[in-house]
Length: 495
Image (cartoon, rainbow, N blue to C red):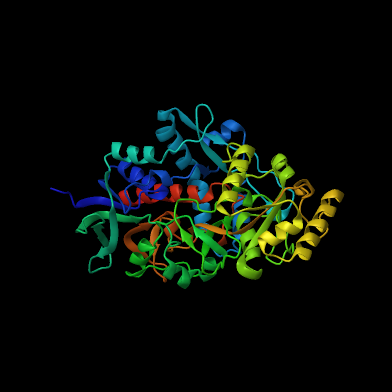
């Protein structure tokens, strides 16, 4: 007979949920871990932030915790709960070290702590928080299923294709369980939780009705949603029983969304994991112009700042312009994080060439022998694009951007045909505004009172991000999810 009574129920089996389930089970709790899809291991992120981890100490890396927290507070204009930032900073190392010792090392893998976080300008301030999951021979490793396997080893019961429908409360308002449906059969089951329910259900980026309500600009500046699972169901379930939610949006956006020439960004919003139109070099500080062929900003800035700038231009889109020689000088851009050239980034020069070739065939990139011809293919005024390219090349030659202040080492000219261009919008990886929580990971009401036995972690929890994501603190979303998931699991089990 199917068990329906548990100590702790974790909803969502990705970064936050897997860690929550393991942590609760380690504390001796009887744990149920559910997920609405058939699997979740592929969702675990390869780059994880941390402060004072074993890997960092071994590599001689020291992150100034106070400086980082002050930076994050300033980055968000303090539209966050600083107590949550400190909670993460003080607990990230324990979580990262647990993952390495208990999940990675048994599979002959480890964490590579990245030292490089150099910058010249305020807008590109960065911190060496990045840890990359690596095999013994220094290659990427997808470890998510290992976390879920570890949870099972610790005694966790897993149920996939099982979707949360609502939270169950008693007369006092305490959460005592969930109602969940089997997505294959439609059967509904009530699962009871003696100690707590932990929501790790992600954001709402694939739910266009919620996007219109909570983050309408993102529907215009983003042309892709790369998290089709994110329907906001956990957030809605908690709000139905009185939970508070962040009042302003937060999101993580990549400036890598190539679209066909003539695309109306207001109507183009493709959701899926198939990477339609993905253009990795969109995150390089190439020459970029608006749809009128005019350069309008310093392209050397965080990914989402680029997309924000484009949202103030005609059509909410931009065009990246480069030439054949650019591909021989990609290392000069000195990109960091997941846009880094070569491991622990994702693409090397040849892989970028291959991606360009594929996108050319698909019509997402245009190629021409002259700038005038390229302007025609991009459907923008020839005179404007020629003027912008000429002006940019002059500043590259003088090694000083007197228009917008891009760093000299990132001024790569566009002088030798063939020339290339791509129309770009944003790729929404996830929304980050979520349920308000306290430092015990308990979901709270607008009055700041904890809803008994209800916890949240990961992208469905709030108070940590606001507006644009600080991608120059590499791995922060993953670490936020895993660290708070682990804390939620521990707290719920000890309830």
